Image 1 (tube, rainbow, N blue to C red):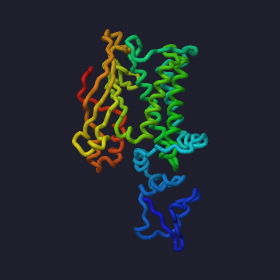
Image 2 (cartoon, helix red, strand yellow):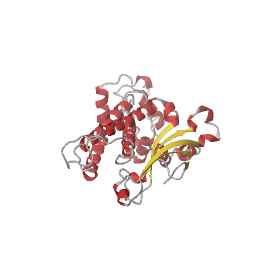
Image 3 (spheres, rainbow, N blue to C red):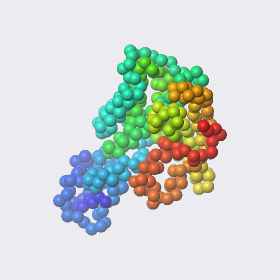
Image 4 (cartoon, one colour):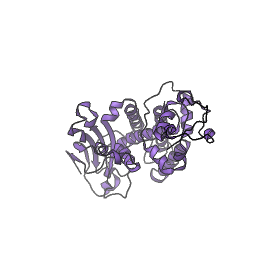
Length: 339
């Protein structure tokens, strides 16, 4: 719990705070009784109203508090008066995150995507046709990755700056930038090439994140998720093991006002897609090619978790809630088709 104390004769008006305000500057002030206490949540609310960042000492010194704070989902729907200076300020606030993401994808690209194995080439890969290399799973993977990166960057910015205004735009630029970086160096891969289909799919994923964060009704009703179970043709490889992936768009009945108090709120309607026989290992094993869209009725696990707020508001509960937005838990739905 953070404490703000006033010395005799001092007056603090929340609306009058300026960037010169400093908790450290008040360290010598005499603590007043309990009515002067301000909770961590109130401090964070104050931070988001002003253009400064106020962080209670405990959130800096206590790693668990910092993790808990970063798991909270903040409102990033605002983007008024957005400009280049705002973007660069946001990027500076998470520069180590950006460096880590670029470093990770560079290492992965060299190790798994044959970056640098050829001169630059363009490649038209098609979409979801029977004659495409992966039956469209790679296109859904590009869309999902663009979506996930935009979600991550926008939330990290919102947690690091005083005012989250514009965070979703900066997150989208950064997310699409990483995806474009990947696609550019795919152009130097003998097994890939720069694909305009991948480039478009990247934009679709980024755009879905923008839509979901700026139109609350969309986030309340729709999740875009990945389900992954390692296939028998690969070790644990959630990025490249297409034989173990399913992509799911879930319509959550809890997001409809008419159903939010009914038992139907615990269910969702799903549309998914998976393939078989489209990876190199499956082809070698003689697996018949199969492209399978399906629909399903599933459990809304996040809505079930919300029924236990004492669990939901713990750090593990928040982590589970965030993960359930993006990951589909196997065997929690009844589909029209399965592997």
